[in-house]
Image (cartoon, rainbow, N blue to C red; front, side, top):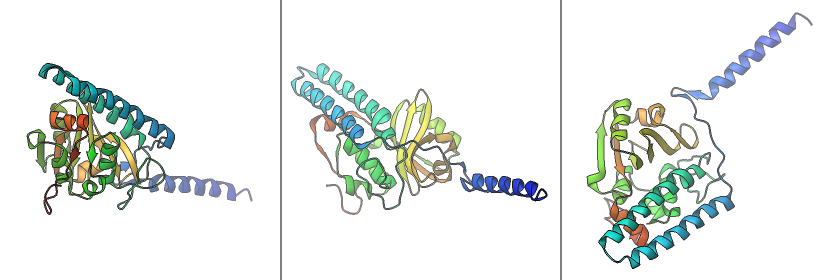
Length: 251
């Protein structure tokens, strides 16, 4: 019996190593997953933002002049950025990914990358066509929400050069479209993060852009900086945002 103890210990070490390697792929360790926020907490986040939007919308309607309207619009843009970046998007972390996932809230049901984008924006109060928008090509999703003047395209640019170029465009929230993927880029104090429903991690994650396998393996990347004045005004006024669809046209 004593002679079997070292062999058993060795087998346990091999098994532990096999489990560790199984959790990795060619891109390195999978990012850690957070737990999605409970439904009641998420509903509360949405309700708070809806209340804040209503108050700003009233200030927007009653603004006495262009200067006052500009001030309201800038406050609205800042609020919408903070709520998406700090509350609504992180609430989805850990929600399972699936190519055909259509979850309507964070939790156990899976969600696809396009639906993550369209659902989060709808829940922030933007009147997008959630299903139709989610089913478009990544570049059409971006063109639905960002004017051409705020879009940049990168083809076969090394990942570090791409991340530096995005950081140079300034802090904020961006949409990024890849060869076969779409998500958000969060730029804060010069640091760039990719927030997306990841088929690599198998869940919604926010990960450093410089170590993102999805960003690294895409030869084409298109980036649009969100929350231009037209989009913020649509949010304040509750205006419908027609989907850009190159096959059927908008609306």
